[in-house]
Amino acid sequence: MIVFGTKGYLYHLATVTLVCGGCGTPAAHAVRRRVTKFTLFFVPLFPVSTSYRTQCAFCGVERKITAAEAERLAGNGGVRGGSSHPR
Image (cartoon, rainbow, N blue to C red; front, side, top):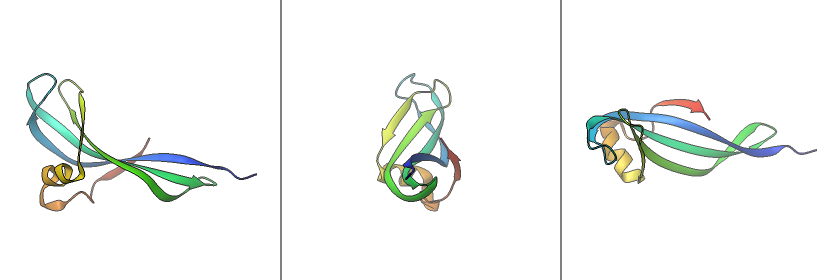
């Protein structure tokens, strides 16, 4: 029997202050990268997809952004750092 599937990882890249598109409030927004990896026998092997999002700390609205926007918002540190939380 071969066991395979996918697993998602969430990386927190930065926290920035932006005006929210949902509620219009200037609030903190978390900039995050989500990577979905293919797993074989519960071992993550390679990334299948990557997406970037911001989430408003005030109202919780999420907005999809491009990798270039995420890198700009994260600043000089780039989009490589951050903590990993499997989801």
